[in-house]
Every structure is written in C-alpha cells, then in structure tokens.
Amino acid sequence: SAVISQKPSRDICQRGTSLTIQCQVDSQVTMMFWYRQQPGQSLTLIATANQGSEATYESGFVIDKFPISRPNLTFSTLTVSNMSPEDSSIYLCSVRRGRLYGYTFGSGTRLTVV
Amino acid sequence: DAKTTQPTSMDCAEGRAANLPCNHSTISGNEYVYWYRQIHSQGPQYIIHGLKNNETNEMASLIITEDRKSSTLILPHATLRDTAVYYCIVRLQGGSEKLVFGKGTKLTVNP
Image 1: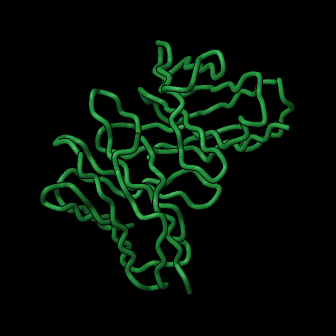
Image 2: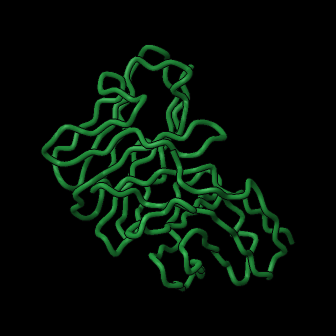
C-alpha cells in the first residue's frame, strides 16, 4: 500500500491563526482526501483534492476556511484558517492507488487551538 | 450519511474469534463493502474489502450474505492489539471514490 507522510503530527495554535498541514505520498495518486476527526467522533470528509483542479468540498466545509493545494500527484496541503477552539481535531489525509487497493491513511495531525 | 449500521461496542476474549456484524440494506449492485479499523490515536488501517464473494486475507475474513444486505468481519484469533474501532463502509457510487465513515464498533479484546 502507499506510504503517507503527514506533517506536523501535532500542534498547539492560538485562536485566529492558521495552520498548514502537509501530506506527502510515496507514489503518484489521482485523488487525495482530507478528513477531520473531532474528539470522540468518527471521521468526516472535508474535501477531495485532485491534481490540477479545484478541490471538491463536502457540505459544511468551505474553501475560505479550509483551502487546499494539490500542486502535483504526490503532495497536498490543507490549511485550517482563522482557527477557533472548535477546530481542535485530528486531521487526516488519505489516498487510494487504484481500484484493487484499499485506502491508505496518514497518521494524522492532532490540532489543539487555545 | 453513512449507509451502514453497526453495534456500538462488542467484547471478545483473547484467542477467540471476533465476529463483527454490519448491516447495509440499501447497498447497490456495484458498491463494495470495506472494513477499516482505527487503533487509538492512529490513522485508520485498511483490513479487507469485497463485492459479493467471501474474502480472506492475512488479517481477517469477510462474509457477505447472498443478498448483500449485511456482512460480518471475522478476526479468527483476536489479540489484545486488535482492540480498536472497526468501521464498515460502503463505497459510494457516481464516480466519487470517497469513503463515508459511520460511528463504527468499538471492539475490546479482554485477556
């Protein structure tokens, strides 16, 4: 399966600031997915990032709050903008190499906003 | 919304088989059933997936009913390290490849 490196693994940020999370994959993939996992909750999909096009956001998530970049087939970033304590969550990226493979997840970024 | 229903929690004795059920009564003909697990503070880990035939790999077996409305994930010899939240997921149609997670089953393997 694909190997994903996600950085940072954790961070504590002041409210009103922004944090950019990086996701690096060891092979080229068409789609990358960004998820949020709030404390004690399941994973919620934020957006799907395709190389060379705008990300597709799920209901309840907007580009101004969670801008995403996808400059090439192995890398993506998610920015959490103008953070508030409600943004404290684990953020995870995920990829799928092909139809015969399952989805691989990064180890996540644990964000605490104070 | 997630298209699956799972029990909130289950317990299993170490060394015994853990059988985790999942209902997906509205599954469509070309939708796959995926199983993932999430050990505390880690990213979800892929376990197995299937369409209509039973599947087995080094981690688990997946039994899908003939009508495909439900499935069971079997961990044949559960260990303490299998304690995790297990997610049963039906992959959506329409060209989208996203996974929608439900609440999953918290499996606790007891010594």
